[in-house]
Image 1: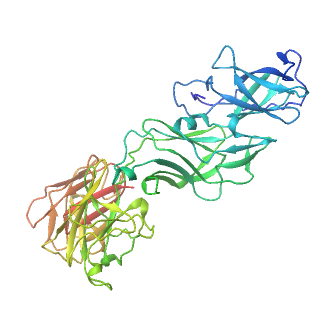
Image 2 (image 1 turned 180 degrees about the vertical axis):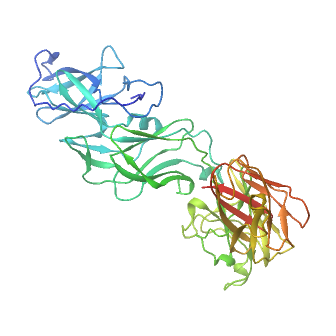
Image 3 (image 1 turned 135 degrees about the vertical axis):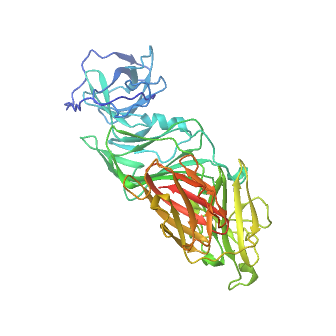
Length: 492
């Protein structure tokens, strides 16, 4: 069913007694098959509107391929097809009824027909997976009760709309390309499986329920996910067939109150992961550690530095590996490593360490369209600093403006608030440097603004303040690595 949605009208719930339909309904008998056909007109109840416009501000429209399921007086489930002249606003569905059975006033009807449970007119099944994305657009569950030869459909659920993906995230190899889009909710509220449809149109989970919906990866097609009314925290993930997660966008800070007949539009987003971390003996070889954040240096390139040294396994502990945000803590299955410098990166439990003898090593990773490559370089001048500060005209060049914390060797972090009345105000251009509190060591010449939140900064001790900082309001995580001279602001 095509969905063209506009703002809500009044709720109207009409109670109907179960009476046999009047003789005015068209009845065509088929003596040989001992069946006859009944035609009913489908409409949308005045309250069947969604509270957000998807396109063209109009009522929902029927598609000629739509089917509905109706329960007869004898409890049989029959499928209705659109036949004859097609009217996308109120088509006529035709049902084939067994001789001795009938459609009575108040009969229950469901759209789409696939959700109706045979033998249970008070139950529906919401699918956990879809074979193609277009089926998601025909998955909005509705119920009608027959009245006066018409079926007025009402929505049974809320809907999450995910804007079409217009680009494909890069991937290590063709076999590891994105193939699955997964919508999942946290907690015990079910979104798939069998539900009882209550008289007030609310849904109650009634067995074999789940919290995840999957559909194939596709470009330029919107994704629609059905939610029974409840409060949810949810996420949308893009995965390879083996479960490797390329991207995950979550709504977890504030639960979404899914109300029947409402729609929540999620804005378009870039499905490319941009968060990577290093691990080594220095971080106790944890595959779930985020202290050594790699800093963005280009649209799809990242650079970090971390100490490599021997551990309990001697030389086997030399080197580093790369961790990707959405696959942390997977018991090394999805960690990124390799064998040779300037090699294609690979992931999995059997990958080796990225080469690095004792010392501090820079590791870069670049995400090309269908492969990822990394390079390594030893840092010849190893710096050791006990303190690091972000200073500038925003605090009249105090030597200790905003203190950074060293999470692990050479990897520094701070959180900065940009707001009216704060130390850093939105839309104001400031000059700034990074120093160690004594002005003996300084980094400058970096430019940070809303268009590019990352920059290289030179390691030097000179007069002049050439760096500039100009940001919109918000809270920012600041990452700085004094072994590579790169800084990054990330808006939370």
